[in-house]
Length: 337
Image (cartoon, rainbow, N blue to C red):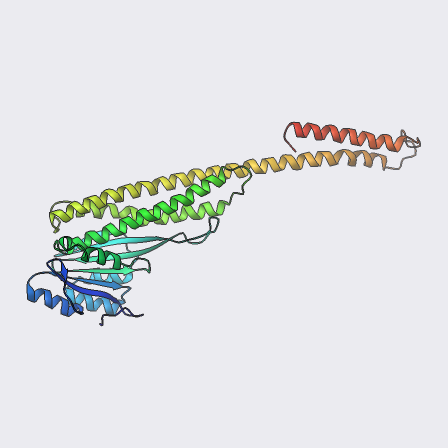
């Protein structure tokens, strides 16, 4: 397996860190692990993107990963969780990204991906799925802070978890803007209510909640004593867990707000339909008066009042206009027209 960034190549980056600094040169996973074991210090950080079964099997063989965990890394679509396989911890996290869209569109709003971390004393392997979950920025940030990297693979685990939770916060802020804009439109008189776009946003919030909420338990577990992480890293993890709790509560509030908006939108539609029906009824009443009178005088009987009078036709027209005018004024006064 070659280290490459080209299309179809799985290894994004592979590096050896000793005393907080990255060793120069290019490494394959096998060479990197051999270097760490020969030195007796440091760790390997390997980044993978969408590996297939064969590629993941090679990585699992190199680092001694459990077959079940390697299978999960290939299949993806795992629920966020934390598992232990002997001396290796496996942390699964869902990633999210905001998709730019029109407010009233029914297209995708939140895109999800996945990151699996295999962490042990000598290595950390990050397997990511999805185009939006790149970790180059995390690697650069940690490499600029050797003191953190000296804490070992746990520091990398914390850095990636912190990055993922921060992305939750960023996406939730953008989704909140959508909800605010939709709320403003619903409660603006005379504005069209696109109920389908509200349901679409609610569905996306459900997907966002499914990605975010289950991570709470793994983060809490990582912050407890007994986990094979340095004490300082566990403190950092607990801070990430606090941020995650705030984001999860915000997303839960979004769900409640959208439920309220759906009710408000349906109520507004019902009111609009009632108003339309009143207008239609009023117009029908206005049209019914001349229709009824014209129908009566159009029956062509020989003996009908005013039929042969010269003033009969204008009198009937005057009656029609008078009645219709009275009805129109009454409807306007009662806000039917």
